[in-house]
Length: 337
Image 1: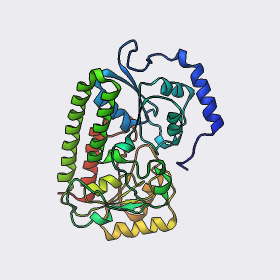
Image 2: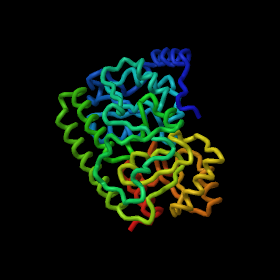
Image 3: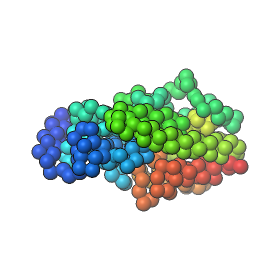
Image 4: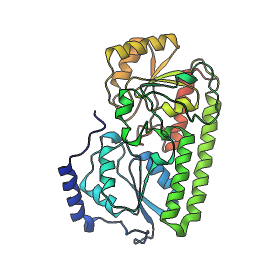
């Protein structure tokens, strides 16, 4: 998959035109300022991590529509005409630039005043196929920050998230996700000043939950047999840096990049040298390569969910629950005590 694939100008024009035609047919939308039939702010979120923030912070004051339905791999999303009209009618749009090229392009042409790119609310970093080496094997201090650390991106890292300037998987680090949450809270307060106090209160509640999650990860991963894990694609770079782990992705940052035979051989060597017990796969992308690697190397398999969407196969009903399942899976795989 080429994650920089853009919809053509002609397709975008057709989508926009059809969206305009269907404006009057769409139900449940409102004009800017949240003065629709139910008085709620119409929020459009690009995919699940943005949807979760909007719902948690907006609370009863927002009606959230997500462009990426459950079970759809976000990077592959192609917008339907109805979704183009939802974008144009939104009071507030929350997205993460660099994850979904079709969404980025449509949002740029939507003309919505209150449009927030979550990538601008924290510092993005470059992660290639392997990350976290500076933190491996010494237990990793949980100092809550890694500003200034440089990690050279591999080819996949340059391809995926390049529009946003780096690895976009910021939601998998609870600390970074909390930074984004604060920015979302501030921006919702500006978009809907009459209810700013509620947005700020909800933000603090969510940030508190994320701080507690961060503490669980830090404590739960402090002592382990190994600091190294192998996963289907390199989505966990921020998490690895935060907690002193060493991630090895079968694919790169893009979930459907095919690894070379040399890469597979390298991972087999890593697994043997670093006492890796488990190869992780995920719910929204193919598990074929991960399971083949595990079989060849005599390793177990388990799910480490990059949380790009919630489905019936997810090990939890929301972000916090799935992240706790991820922690339990990592503890088991790493031999955490």
